[in-house]
Length: 378
Length: 208
Image (tube, rainbow over all chains, first blue to last red; front, top):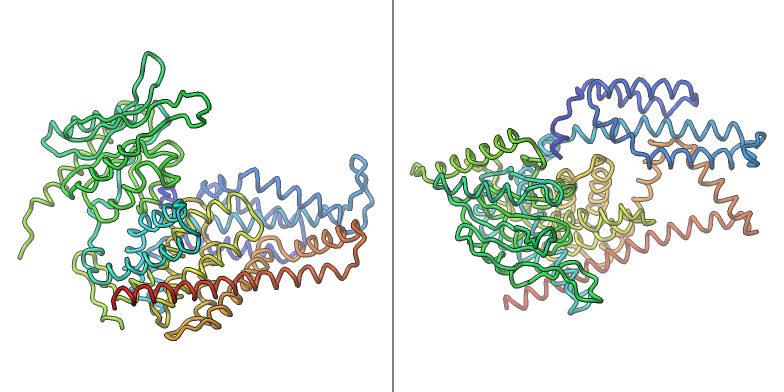
């Protein structure tokens, strides 16, 4: 997601590659197509290496080679023998040509996808008679967590039939539309901190430790830190489970303990009432606070854990948000929470990077407080 | 009924009309499904996953239209859903975005309008899912060229030969596939309209 914003292939050159990609579909010449592919790869090597990473996906090449093999088997007259398998040279050549042309076209599409921005599309559709699309898109991004919650909680609920569940989801969406239409001002108010701070890393990389340090620094500066941190509980080297530390009061609750009982397949036994308590706690967060939410992971991606709380609270709250997300899930979870971008610290990292990130958060928290405390004219 | 558009002094965005709010909510509902179920089906590489996702989108949009009938509702919701793809992770966005836009456009042309009906919703659903076939063919031509169609055809012929079936069966299988895809969309459109009418009645009963 942040990578998309950094792409730099100039639009004119991109148009040229598009023409080249389409032109390469016409001649049936393998050397010409290979030359075109090399030209394009050279171009992306200079302008946008992210495209090369995408085209380097092994699955694409495995499928491509499979197509070439099948093509050698089914097309043309088979007159060569490869390990006892009769193959056609014409067929193999056709198959290879397909793969090379596909590589050309897919790399062009990748480059174009990476250039595509919401602003560009909103402007284009506005010219086509949809001037309110920009506002609609801003609203839709805000609503996305809520919608994901409607789907995940609606499909999980096992009490009634699927048709009744879908009916309730649709009725819920219609009610939400009425609610927003009644008070568009409140729903369209800008989210003060449109980019959350995200701390990511593998288990044990120090995410919770970083948040604890941040909470102390915020409090030392007289800034209010809200939310919760999820420290691990150890007995010697063995991880016993997780607690939930509520901020700012420092109240500690047992969230999960190892499910050691025989026959139990899950690793942790969670206390659902603590998730509920966390949800109520998040609902009291104000726009003036800096809110810390620790350990957004697999459970949240599946719609459980702290997800329902975040989905309900985040779309309508401003302030500074600092989220700790398990490594590999940061991109998915940031988009699901309705953010287009995020400032990310990847742990483990050196001391200087951690300190710079921390100072950045403190600066945002200070300016947020100033904004809130400055009386508006009129 | 839409309100005049005036820019919001704080955001610079045009203030949003109720018609856009309704379409946005249903577009976001479809977008939410694309992000969750769509990504899951795509990862599983299930056959016809595009058709199933299109059917789900049709059902959501048609039900929304039955609750809030308005010309342009389906297209607006589709454009919002398409834009939401931009905030979902993954490098290749252009093709799914184009598919969503095309589906919304076809659905609006056939089933859209201020007076939705069961038969137009069903027909719109059928035509829309059928149009996903055109997407497959257009994408195959653009990416692989016509030779890929020759390979598919030859593989089909060889399979029929191995099972000692007549060659005509290939065309019957293709025709059956087309009918199946049309029927999936037809059912989605009809079901969406039925659910939308039920939601409308529930709301009317609540307000009575």
